Image 1 (cartoon, helix red, strand yellow):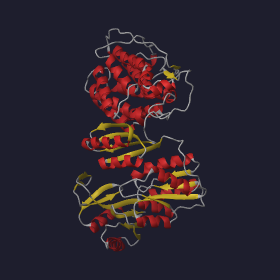
Image 2 (tube, rainbow, N blue to C red):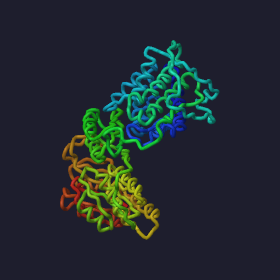
Image 3 (spheres, one colour):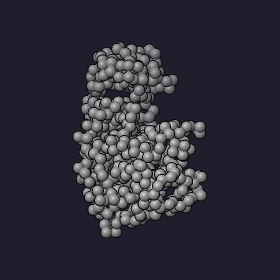
Image 4 (cartoon, rainbow, N blue to C red):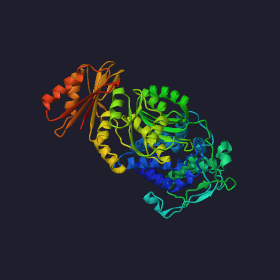
Length: 560
């Protein structure tokens, strides 16, 4: 099996599966009622595999089988979307661990099912998890499929012919597979795919919300497509169609209630953290919501949870390690929201009392947050809706950016024309506000503010709170860290010396304005000493000094 699924076959399978999911996406989305009826399971599976396929396309032509499987698993992990996409990424990781070292498909699917079950905090029967398990059991030791797939002349190209239709069948369509001896890898792969189809038809027997809605599980339907494309690549025999069961005619479409106790928001992020930290994170997130899935390893994790407190879920990630690519999606569009107001407005988030006053002085409506925390999604949405009918949002931190984007999406549902400027530092928010002009067209104003924020380099000094390995070396509690554009560049004990060194790294011949914002913990003379040094070494640069009142950062530095 290892020779059959070599690097070239892995590429063909991933691209074929992504293509097949792309063409069956709408049918799978229409089945989506569990765990949340948000109609995006097919889309999430498609995007997950599409990211993996793009990663594989970047591999050199002479990459070996182990490299291909590893790249497939990593690409799916990084690109995983939604609950189903995260589970699929864990399945691919389990297969990669076995097939990347020359193991067999039976062992690979068993490992995939085991890892997928362990990744889900509360596994549910009647979902893609149980269907994957049954597919693995079908080839251990080895029952085989009945229906022989149709040979396809496009097999050598590794893709379905473009004219092959996608057939949407009734939920009870299909035939059970009879057990016949498996004599080759292709038959083994088709045995797993056929058993998955049988298990798919039985998902409503295990999950009441599926039975009441007259559908099979959407994630399991997508899994069947993935397994069938795998069988096609291994055997060289391609199906004429990829069958997506449709809603039973006895169950017309209607509003489907949320299946679990769940939460109003889907929170997802990638996380750089140790295994010990992730073990604690699982417990925290499990107490915050449901549909919890955490997958990955070797300090790269993909975290997914449904919760009513999106901010708390992100903060839990901050305590565990470094979350990034944070996405927050509002799952319940029916909730009542504040009334819309008219006019142009700016909403800015900040953690310092002095910064709040400064932003308000420049005309922004300010949402305060505690240092190291993110604002509540409902609070931020309310601020946007109350700010006007056209609103620009300034997040001030990369961990706030995802919450700001989710709040803007919710405000748009109320008719507010909201846009988020990716200002991930307070100095960038100030730069954006400096060019804000309510008399311009809204789109032009957003573009100008985005350019101003993007043209502002950000630096800061902060005190290390724990021992950690940084890009500048090991730091210990009490050390002062000098960061440039979010990365630790220097570690030391002298705030003035570090500030001078950070500025030396940030300044360029074209620099025009330096903004210094002192925090509550900064030495009283620090901003003035830095300003005097700048006057001596760069008299062409204008310097503005403010007291921000932030308690986490000793000094914020902006260079425009």
